[in-house]
Image 1 (cartoon, rainbow, N blue to C red):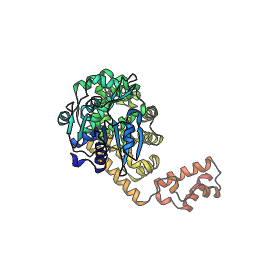
Image 2 (image 1 turned 30 degrees about the vertical axis):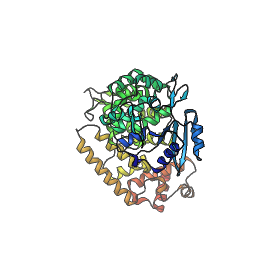
Image 3 (image 1 turned 30 degrees about the horizontal axis):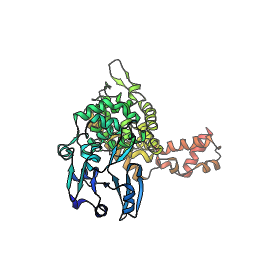
Image 4 (image 1 turned 90 degrees about the vertical axis):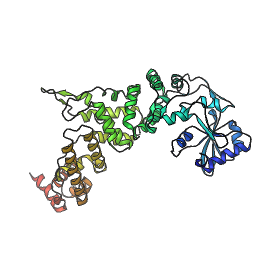
Amino acid sequence: MEERIPSYVRMVMSKLLEHGFEAHVVGGAVRDMLIQKSPEDWDIATNAKPDTVKQIFKNTVDTGLKHGTVSVVQDGEMVEVTTYRRESSYSDSRRPDSVEFVSSLQEDLARRDFTINAIAFSPAEGLIDYSQGTEDIKSGIIRCVGSSSERFREDALRMIRAVRFAVQLDFELDSDVIKAIQANAELINRIAVERIREEFNKILVAEKVEKGLRLLHLTGLLGEVLPEIEQSVDFSQNNPHHEFSLFEHTIKSVGNINPQLQLRLAMLFHDVGKIYTKTVDKNGVGHFYNHEIMSVKIADTIMKRMKYDNRTREKVIRLVRWHDYRIKPCEVSVRKAVYRIGKEDFEDYLLIRNADIRAQGSRYLDEKLEQQRMIEGIYRKVLNSGDPLSLKELVVNGNDLLNAGVREGQDIKAALNYLIKKVLEDPSLNQKHVLLGLVKKKNSL
């Protein structure tokens, strides 16, 4: 494993050793090397105190002195060096009340969350593993160091981190871990929503996202973090176009789309409004009229609560709003759809529709997908033709209409809307003299 450690990390370790201190690569970097993955971050644990580390190295950053962490800048790279420590009780389930520096690596590893993150390595001593983390990696198990309930009561964020690791590594949660999360799930509400959101985002963009959403439900975390989605678990759609419950449809659609955060958020929220809009006709068939409008309201509420940035929130809301928009496979219908949805969102709309359709079940699937292929083909043709698809692509603007005698304000807006509708139906009309003639004719009626 030594040859996989970058030279700048080995240099930091060597300097600590030269000064008579211990130095071990710990945590995620060791775990990643063991599963043949390239570590993104390198952390070194040592018995040197923070002030001593700062004396040994010329270029350091005080990234966490309170908790014993000094970032060493070596060859332009950042390496976190942390003193062995013991943590006191966690009265708020978020952070230790106090930290005490210790001289024992074993004691330092004993405070860590999961066995797979409690492994150390040094070139001289090799792997140091007091909690059988290497065996858990081989078995593909997420297990806590010591008591699962104690670890989660110390830091409730560890519960959703357990799910995140299971998803990212495609490991299984140990049965004791599952039971402990179920018993302590409500403690997640003590954690800052920003920290929960960041862990949730990592689950959402993972390859095994469906597994992650199922685990969040199984452990009770989904009901605490996203109660609106939890309500969909046993919600029957009673519709021939949907073979699955609303929850199953939702998680399948999330898994069907590209692992981009905005797209996956849109699929997560696209049908959440169905719970509040369901009606059943005389034949027992469920209908969800205007569910996309309700989904927008709920999605907006959730994303504000979880403090997503405005750009993400607005994009997701637009996609949710138009996810169920139906287009006929003809040029006029496609042009009108691009105008209504917007050029900037139309490609994503197509992805959303495909993911949604594929998650509905096998009945009608082939014909729906064939129609989507036709629509996508027409869209490419329309796009390549240069047909005007927005107001700014009209050859006339507000000034042209003013000069033609149209009154300022609402009359200008109404005239432009009238012209774009005409041009969407027949792009050949997009000529200045033709459009001004259409406006004059309409105003004379």
